[in-house]
Amino acid sequence: MSEVIMALFFVGGLFVWLFPTAIVTKSRRISANEKIAWILLMLFLSWFAFIFFCLMAPIGRTQKHQRPY
Image (tube, rainbow, N blue to C red; front, top):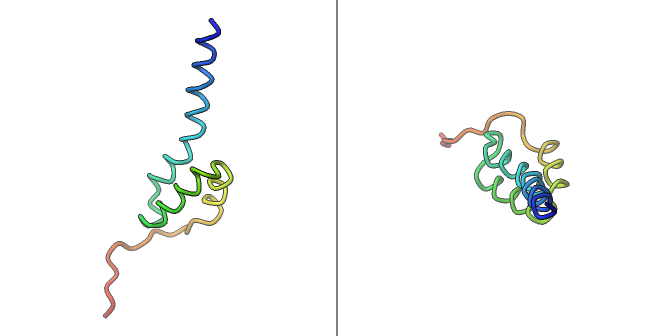
């Protein structure tokens, strides 16, 4: 019985740790390079970096094809 409880805590903890990473990965508010930086930060700082992402990520969409004329 204790192994089941430990497994549930492990799966729950893993979900809580990976949930912010999934949100950043699916976000359309930032570019690919910014996503990589945020994901690396979250690997080392976890929820603190996710809170900073929610506060600091640009609100508007980024334009994919910007051509200087």
